[in-house]
Amino acid sequence: DAVTQALKASPLDIDALCAALNALEGDEARVTAVRSIGGRDQAKIWAASAGRSTSLEDIVPENRGPATEVIHAGKNSLPVFTNFEKRFCRVADNDTVLYGYNEGATRPVIGPGCFVAHHFADRDEVGVDYYQVPPDDAELPAGWPRPVPNEKGLQMLVYAKMIDYLRKVSDHVTIGRAVKKG
Image 1 (cartoon, one colour):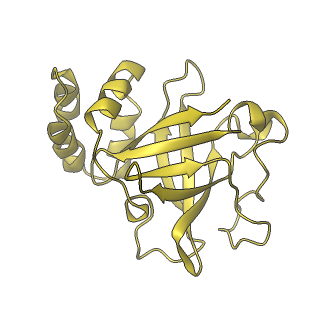
Image 2 (cartoon, rainbow, N blue to C red):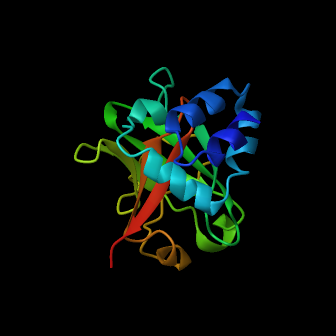
């Protein structure tokens, strides 16, 4: 398929990969394609997407109202529990941030990994900022977990002191790289 062919190019042509992903019909096809990409190819995509800015509108379209869930399904490069979802929503009366949490097989054990996403102007990228969590009184989508600080419980091992930067790959796909401090 076109995505596989684009990934075989050396060096990776990010515009060809973008076109191949944009040509896929529907979310299910994109999720299947993204979740088939291994760790080495993810690293190539990250490098090739340098300089491709992301905005909050790339993550949650402006036409979505506050507390309306938008799911980003993905795959990480860890050896186990590789499939995940980052769930985002717009915030009432604040267009400079998004609220969100992580959904996946490990959430019942580790916790939700709540975050506040915002644009980092120095990088021109959106960062999923685990240093911050939505306030206790935040209006969140129905069924979302209440925000829990990432410095408490087992989730501190995964989410504390971390920002996951996102780069745009195509109209519906971003790639992230987590950066931990300390």
